[in-house]
Image 1 (tube, helix red, strand yellow):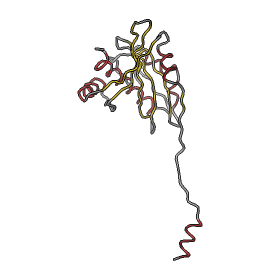
Image 2 (cartoon, one colour):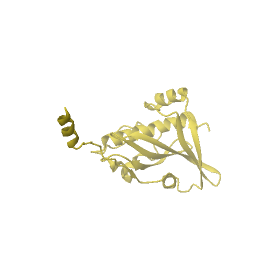
Image 3 (cartoon, rainbow, N blue to C red):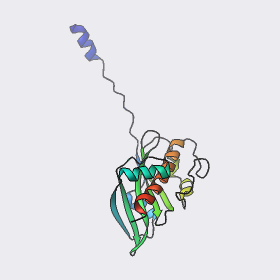
Image 4 (cartoon, rainbow, N blue to C red):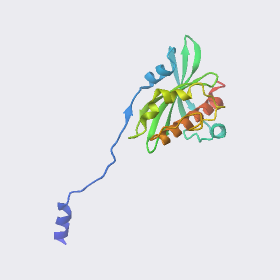
Length: 180
């Protein structure tokens, strides 16, 4: 028995760990300014989302609102409301993608920015040309990948989940923020 124990200790232990991969592209402030370049003030709020709100958001967007709270900022220029900046997370293939969305007071997308990308592939969703497809979209648009939002080969899950996330945030805007 002693010999087996010594032999077991002689073999090195191997632990396999998946490599961590995350790239931070923009800070909150940088993403805010990229989307609302004229804004002089961003006022942060933590919005509580009730079960009733979640149900309405899912009905409007077809996607479940997972979080009970959402970080948002009201963008203003010299006291005039420009819209809302919202930070959200969606899963790419395995990891979260953190992105920011600008929504005007009337519910149009003013822009999206990819802030942190944690996957090893698919960061083509950062391409300005692809992100520009969201500009001026409203909750009334279809948000279909390969129809009004082009797919990206090699980034299909990331593209689909960002697309679904943006539509969900438009629904959140309508349900929670448009009366603010």
